[in-house]
Length: 293
Image (cartoon, helix red, strand yellow):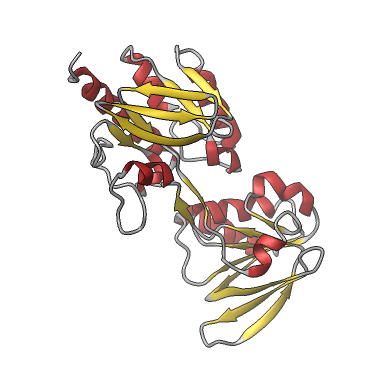
């Protein structure tokens, strides 16, 4: 959305293709308190403010349109969407990441039956119940704090020290003092049990000792993997972790193809993603202006 606004401000004809709804994973964030201008808001509220702002610009927005492939066509690109093909002089990809999960058998089998990747979406189903949040980053701690106001008890499990910002970790420790949360560091989930629904988790510590924890819900925030398939299909260079390699202005190894946000592995914050989108759009404008007419 940020890139589309800045492209439009440069009088470029911009088309924004979104496979789902505008805002992406922003819509899954319960609380945002570090985006400039929003002292306290939910992800969906910030997403709506962004999309409302976008509507004031002449950008063609196509929600629920998946892109199947992108290929070069001389100095241009052909973008294959679900409603047809678009020819563009430049493409900016901001596909972000998806949840990587724990890779355990019961995880996919019990998805929607106790296992979830979105606390904002599914927390109401666990009112007054015991739940686990697996992960130690900002998203995990944010989810845990939200769940503390819904569930009877929230266990936060992470194999090492927390990576989340200290102010969020401190809030979680306050919840622990109140008996609403319990922090279990140095442990990992090795088995997810349940037939028709989740019943318990098997945990393992660094020594290999195992224990079983009876819970009703598991919210997985164990990192993510970049959604890089479109870039790969175009032959764009990736780094060793699979993120799109790009310079400070979003340029990639393919001229005219730019990248911004979490798909580049940089920043991993709403404010840095918005900034990267704006910077890359301005670089795309410079690229288009120098193309032969």
